[in-house]
Length: 85
Image (cartoon, rainbow, N blue to C red; front, side):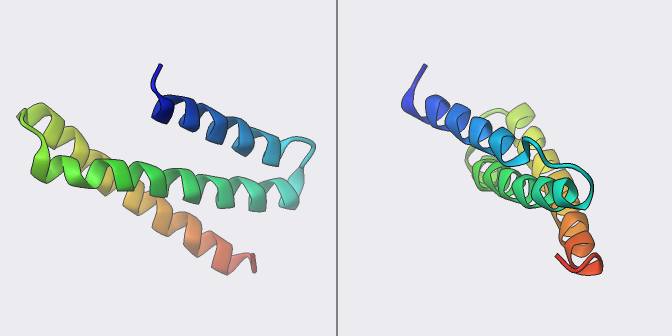
């Protein structure tokens, strides 16, 4: 396992810890905040794939990730605004 994979595992564990013991509105706020950060990481990784990948399958996957995660991030940001987070 390389250093970037270990870093991602640490990040995921940190996200899980942020949610522990939370329920209701407190959970919703923490979940949305953590997922926005998680999605941003995916967008940062996927965006160059459309341009830089060799294989069309990877380009298509990168494009699909950018489209889906951008839409989901916008939705979560709207919820944060709507719910006063």
